[in-house]
Length: 200
Length: 365
Image (tube, rainbow over all chains, first blue to last red; front, side, top):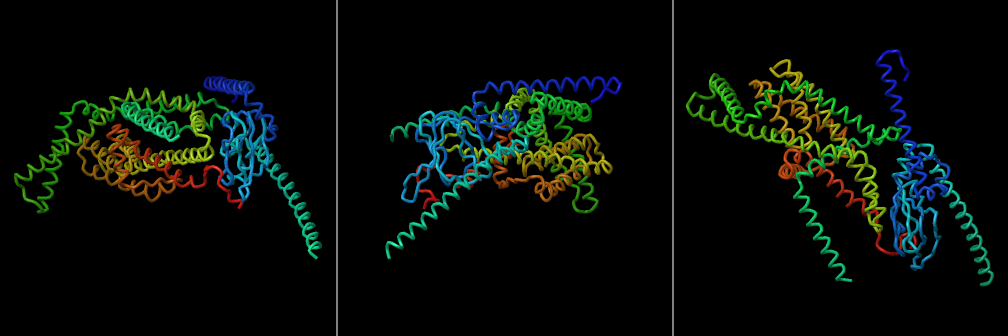
């Protein structure tokens, strides 16, 4: 606001400047505190949050919740509604499926700094696998789909970057799954042909 | 193992009894605390929205308080002289009762004369006795009602102190309240817990904010309708404003609230003048406002309507009154609404989750 020469204008102008300084000071203090937060690195080095602004990281940090798990404790279960993303801060997480014969197939393990459950951030979908803590004192940082919604509402560009990161991962997974499926199909066809020859 | 479970259950039961007993013992403290939390809940989005555009929470809260205090002082400055006589009356119960009784007797006599003119009744000693007895009863009841308000006003200082103390901290640390609640959810229930908590918070927020918007609209509509009465009766603009405010506030108490609003409004007119047309007009305004509320305002404002059965409404309001006086009656319905929202979510949404260990999953079959 510009000083218009009147007494009122002068005081309004002064008050606005003081107000702006207060806001800047509060904002700098919050960003300064952020660099000292022990969870900051775990969030920053993750592929989803590498490119986003410091303000958006501050927003995420304010919403991160720390959870502690014991060995063999379930984090989430296959077929349940998923709404959270998890970052491993300490320990290890095993992600697995169970077949109809109740055989356990370990899909992957996620170690410190790794991230899992990110699909649920796009939409509240059902979990395709079960996640279980492998070690005692496994610490996870969690963020819910509601937090990402709030982030996207306030920082649309940053929200888009995160969502793009997740869709890229989904696309990569889909490509690799399609490749594996086609390879398996081809192998299966060859095996069937061999079997047919052998039977003849 | 069985012993462990027995002792754990015993501990939970004993702890629950201790907590409930403690809460009951300090229930007078709970009313301002709970009211502050409800108000904080309603205005927190404003504080949060301001903080998102870079305005510190402390600055927004100060601005809200200054604006509220300014408005209250301004309204008080305008309204207090007009209701000064009524306030004076409230400090002299016997005088008030006597004056109200004599006014009611006069109204009764006027009505009796009109009825005699029309040939409906004959003037007898019994009619006079009935008028006197019924007037004394109405005066007694209205005096009781108004003095309950007066007694409430005396405790306002203590109430406001606790209320503002809790309100400031609830507004400053609103997000911490939510995070702490999330942290308290056990691991085995974590994702469903977060989901239910968020759904409950959203539904409750929209319900409470809807309630505020609804009552502001009703207050304005009541004031406009009462202004019509100002032209035709002895009702003054200031009194119309006070009555509209009363109707808006009491409307929070479903079913009983409008009746209380109509009674208080009529009594205020009775105290200031004996204009029977104005009294009937106020009752009419309350009925019109209720009609508009049910067919127009409620469906438009309340995105997530929380329907509460009238029996629960009345019982809840009475229980609220027994536990925390007039304020208990006002906050009873929002509290019942909140409980209903939580129970509904728990019963409906919980079906989406199951953390029973290691059953054969659907996809693997």
